[in-house]
Image (cartoon, rainbow, N blue to C red):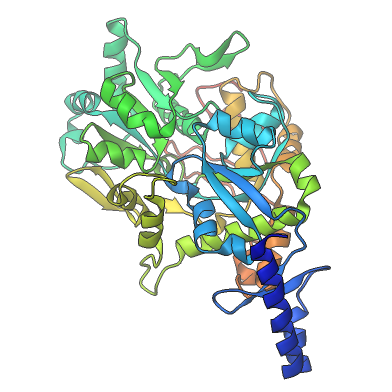
Amino acid sequence: MNTARSSLVLCALLILTAVLLASTAGCGAATAGSGAGDVASAVGDEKLVELLPVEKDRLRLGFIKLTDCAPLVIAKEKGFFDDEGLEVAVEAQANWKILLDRVVGGELDGAHMLAGQPIGATIGFGTPAHIITACSLDLNGNAITVSNRVWEKMQAADERLRSPAPTHPISAAALRPVIDEYRAAGKDFNFGMVFPVSTHNYELRYWLAAAGIHPGFYTPSDARGVDQAEAVLSVTPPPQMPAVLEAGTIDAYCVGEPWNQQAVRKRIGVPVVTDSEIWRNNPEKVFGVTAEWNAKYPQTHLALVKAIIRACQWLDATDGGGKFLNREEACRILSRPEYVGADYEVIAASMTGTFTFQTTDQRSVPEFNVFFQHNATYPFYSDCIWLLTQMRRWGQVAEQKPDAWYHETAAKIYRPDIYRRAADSLVRSGHLQASDIPRTDGYKPATGEFIDGVNYDGRKPTAYLERLKIGLK
């Protein structure tokens, strides 16, 4: 048992003794919610937590240097992991493939993952492994940035973009003349995105296809996903995006923060659309572990999920006027070299409730990053199914599948049952309200809040695919 956990258990026993001496009723209040084998423990805000009998108390978690690694970083820095008796090392990884491989290989216990990574691995696209997620980390958080040169060409082709603050959302239709110019000259228009099963890949493809621009198919003979492509999408690690754009290797990219704001600050590019303008409150990152790890360490997994939910809640806390209470502190923590390592001002440019499209166009976007509101931490089956539809749409799922396959696959990967056990424990200890846990069968209501207005119902994935003009059916 590590030192942190030993101290917590001792503290817990002392508190329980005091409570017993104080009153029998008080004892009931302190312990009635505890699960089998749980111990009540004091935390910094003087509320009690249920200290689970974890099977492993020293853990290594991976992340990529992006703003939305914040839940793991904050859970560590604000002591939420410690409250669960966990000694956690949070380690930056070079890219998404290395991160996934290290989780699969057991070098990492779990990680900040792209929402599509557990799905792609489990269905056998890329590194095959059964990965599960019991907790979503955030909604939104990405944008599409074009180089200054491309932005000037877009403005030349569409006078509406010449305003210091153009009307949003900006359609990819404004990019069509630029792509046509490149193709006429025998050149590829190159987009960077972070990983083949990333939300960035699917959001970028969605944005292009909504304007009639074909982003290409994955085929058995073309793992690059450029078959029939009018624009070429390729992988670039997130922190390298601005440098690769500045070098001219790519013409535009889709990435999470702070790497869009970095392009604005360096005056090398212009963000033209955010992912929340492509699909409002879309899923972004999740906390992923292997199914085997979960089976071996179920109580440890629950403890991790509890700490992460509390971190997400802390990140979204606001005062009565809607001002974020903790985001500035979070930005300062994230700016440290062992975490995101970007300047505080760059991280804060999007994370504190604003977003800068260009120096003349800074807007209030309080929901650019959502960590807890809108049930952001809940692992909805319908989010998983949307990502599966996009994998099918672009050929990563090679054959047509019935609706039942989508539902069964989602239930295999997304684990709201684990989430609910963790969240219920937090309700019993007073850290969550019962109303913070959605009453749901795992499916969000149908929505048409996409840039093209196409309605998505997670219960009917095949019908949804039929509505999309470009893509496999």
